[in-house]
Image (cartoon, rainbow, N blue to C red; front, side, top):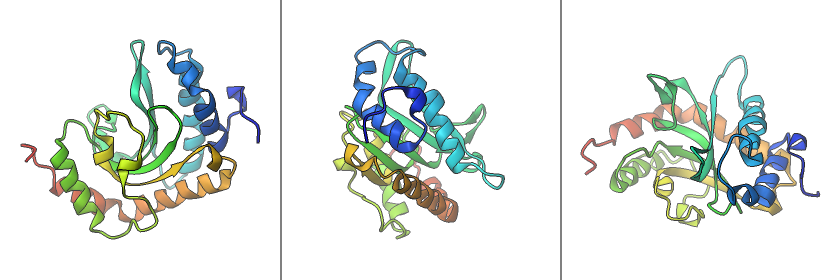
Length: 212
């Protein structure tokens, strides 16, 4: 499969992720703007693709793709799949609350991670470790990687590593199999739908406002 050079042709997870890995760094060399190809790809192509894969008449999720603001790129680009049930705040769904499936992209955009994570927000590292430990004790994540130190997230100021419950890693060599990418996403969504209440309960019970 050749690289996808025209973002209009990037309509599947595989083609979108391939464009990000092979051409995304070109955008990162310039100031963030709404017209940058990478920004357009996240805002339009990836959002639409994820919406078509996870939303139905029975389930509705809000897709939040974040790349940057005010001329600066985010430290880590992401695409979160949020539900009102676990991530609702006053102004709508927010990745600052709850638990949710989320695609994280390596700092150098060389890898993509399908993660199940909790909102890191302003939580202390020890608080996140306690939350993740409690959630993993549910024992339903055996099909996923748990060692988030493998994720290439740079200095990780938002503590995404510590907020990751489990994940699957994709390199450019994994992107030809779009059916696998979609199946992995559907499996994680099913896990979220099945165990989300228990995961959220463990998340809520282990948040300590003093960060001990």
